[in-house]
Image (cartoon, rainbow, N blue to C red; front, side, top):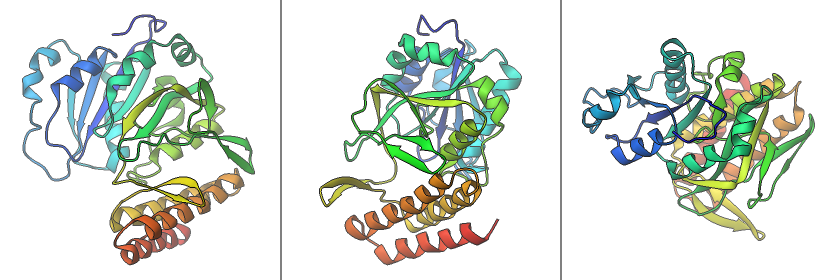
Length: 308
């Protein structure tokens, strides 16, 4: 456990979906940075034990490690909700929660949490979450952060932004959320499943008067889909590389959030439209199965536009 965190009690949730094993080195790295780790086995319809977990008995005997088998019920949102529910019952003393997935490099977590500016924000009642900046492992590009200027407008920050900055959104993985804020916001939306679960939660935090921050001095390797780097008119962009099924979910969830935000933050609704256009450009310029993916994206968007 890192010193100097204003005596915050921090837990981590590690969700496993694609993998078949728990990496001991990763678990030891996490337990050097936080008080306890909840592993959520989110593999769908898998009955075999999670390889390597039983070999961590020396860690679990200390009460630092707990396993939940969720079988992808409610998608990633369901995995998070089951972990939060268990922690609130078994360890109500937890102050903050780090969300992680198997596609993230956790080596930056300990120095990030040890930063006194980060720990000070995590102790503030007006903070919802603080996160480092993700850097895609396939393309090497840092994700762009954005800020709300008004209900009608958002602006992008440079990829190489530095220091602590209030932002509109952070991704799930490596984001550190205050448990007090999460109690106010309630569970993650399991109807979304995977895509935009984090976006929805950040929007709810903003509407509750809480702030989300990123720290540009810290970045971590992260993989989402099979991203490919390309440029349009000199602008560096990333194609997601997801298959048609995932593209359907992206289109549907994006339109769901657009509908929910139309009256409160029309600027975000416009951003959702631009997000779908960006997704389509990436498919057309840099990916294969273009017709299938574009068709799935459009069907998902139409479903999100009209269906509940």
